[in-house]
Length: 286
Ligand SMILES: NC(=O)c1ccc[n+]([C@@H]2O[C@H](COP(=O)([O-])OP(=O)(O)OC[C@H]3O[C@@H](n4cnc5c(N)ncnc54)[C@H](OP(=O)(O)O)[C@@H]3O)[C@@H](O)[C@H]2O)c1
Image (cartoon, rainbow, N blue to C red; front, side, top):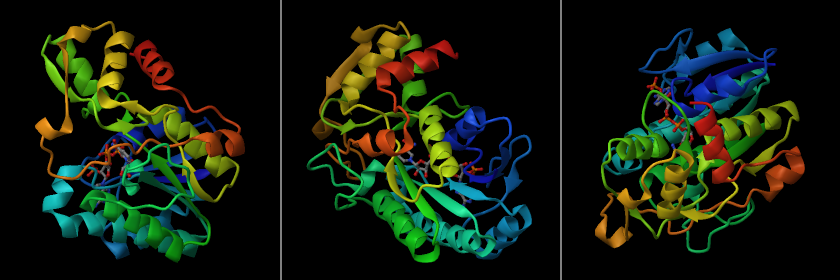
């Protein structure tokens, strides 16, 4: 199968490349950070998207590119909607033109977090600009594509040249720095490799609809951080619990946006890992 992977220079795009099968043919797409063998395509430029997709003629587009800095999206609202919403629409239109399936990577932040452990068919209520613009992407996807899937993930992590929450924690604790971590935000931290495996299964089994391709826990950030310390043999006493009240962030955060992964496990016949399993896998591959 021929895959066109946006966000090919980002964490998930890069990890997808590591879990692909040998027979898979991948085109990794970048915007401002070219890598070995990546193809340039700015997804906010409709003509560029069109020309690039026509030229590559993929069977499946895996759309991971996004403006992912949640707080920056509050300051740069138009840019957030342009990348996360309109860019997704342009890709969906081009996918339709070449008869490709499109799998859009979305977020647990489409939920307001008042309840937690969300199933795929529960009503969304995105809180901030990042969340709203990502949900706009889900809407535009369904408007322009007849062969789509949404893969929602949560607090993505894994080995990558740019830091993510988990690699930042590992770096800080290795340098013996104290870190303050909130106890009152709950998610389903997702190893990018494991999400990538689920995304490839959606493609191979030609599934449509919404899937929660996330980690198999509902865990608060402080407890997750302690698990990171445990998996990497680091000093847990450097991690201080704090509450969101004392840690002001620009964008609103859902209190509990954890995701229920039963549908993925049942329909795709695969296992979504707990964070203990994923962190051990990450430690083993260092
Ligand atoms: N990170 C998380 O915790 C998290 C949580 C929930 C959902 N998600 C979703 O998961 C997906 C993957 O996230 P990630 O953490 O792997 O992302 P990431 O590492 O922050 O990378 C973002 C990617 O988007 C690309 N991009 C940005 N603007 C672009 C544009 N105008 N045209 C083309 N490409 C553009 C970047 O390309 P260049 O670097 O080349 O410019 C980069 O490859 C995203 O859709 C995100 O919304 C992430």
